[in-house]
Image (cartoon, rainbow, N blue to C red):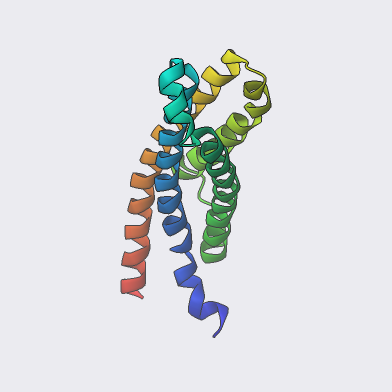
Length: 156
């Protein structure tokens, strides 16, 4: 098997990974909401919610998201470069790079949040809400790119 044989299919690794990451991002959002509910709940409710270990799960899923999003971003750029010999500087690429920046910035707030800094928490939440919105948009524009790639494969 040569690179020429698998190269066209490398273009589809990035979209599959990104769709899995979008689903994982929504799960992280759920965990984050539950973690916040736990922290803000009255003593009786908190006792029940603590059993879910939402904060720990949110932290672990968020750490994995950070790593895989950066790898997925670089991988998508690499696959595009291998296929086309250049990067297409447009909204999909620029928003993807912005998302990698947002998630890294959001993760960088964790030490401040652990010390109880409410501004850091609200900034973390805000960055991640923007991230989820951009991720949804990226999924749609990414599918347009996938359709174009499939058309090119059929035309070959």
